Amino acid sequence: MRRIDVFNGDADGLCALRQLRLAEPAKSELVTGVKRDIALLERVDAGAGDLITVLDVSLERNRAALLGLLERGARVRYFDHHYAGEIPSHPGLEAHIDASPGVCTSILVDRHLGGRFRAWAVAAAFGDGLDQSAMDLGAAIPLGAAELEKLRELGRSLNYNAYGEYEADLLVPPAKLYGVLARYDDPLQFVAAGGLVDRLNKGRHEDLEAAAEVAPRWSAAGGLVLVLPDAPWSRRVSGTLANHLAGLHRGQAVAVLAPRGAGYVVSLRIPAGARRSADEFCRDYPGGGGRKEAAGIDLLPAAELDAFVNRFASSYG
Image 1: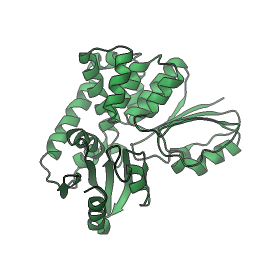
Image 2: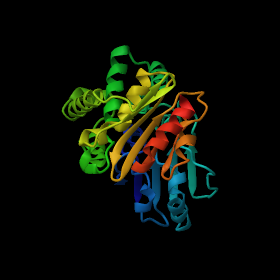
Image 3: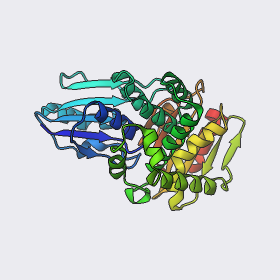
């Protein structure tokens, strides 16, 4: 039997997989990539007798590939917190999907495992911008303030590393990063070891400092739109910057656009209770989707930038 682990290369995907492999040690093939490379099941060639674990990857965006794998006899275990649409009913599919606010994939895995490796879920929740969920989980272990702050920095840096158009944009390829994480049972051990985590922290802070010099394209009481210049750091920092700005401007909607080819990658962060959720707003565009408070658009054509800003302003201004 082949084991294949398919996971988003961000903090949530990495930490979800680490929890599962601590509970179920096994050698597996890894399929991953940059954060926005979510059509990952298309890369998997598997069939009868193979076990595929999918973590933090939208079922809606991978539906056809998933159904094909199930039809060929593969068994699929699926953990995710993004909008999924109708979940297929199939004896080969074990689905753990919850798109509720305040939930990430690592929290779903934490529930599945009964909290056995909860510190990893804390780091993932911080990385996904779910600070209150992370604090609540941390209090249940319990973790002190200094330990929580270390996990906050770790989660944000792991998440930061996943952003970029290509793997070459990243400081560390996600599969290689997981190989280092897999040496540690506890994320605080990884932090204490320094080296790689220090490199990630330094790069994240340098990119955020560069982004702080960019003036908003639009801002009002309800939110802001930031359009970044065409530079390697902007491709890396866009999603992390969206989380950072959402934390600074609580209660406001945030859109961060980074140049990509003939258009822009869009990261949205929308407060709970807004007139339109983030995933609803983004699904109006090809390649758009996500969850209620955090979503994105794979490619917004440059010619549509002004219309996007006007629509965002009318929705959240």
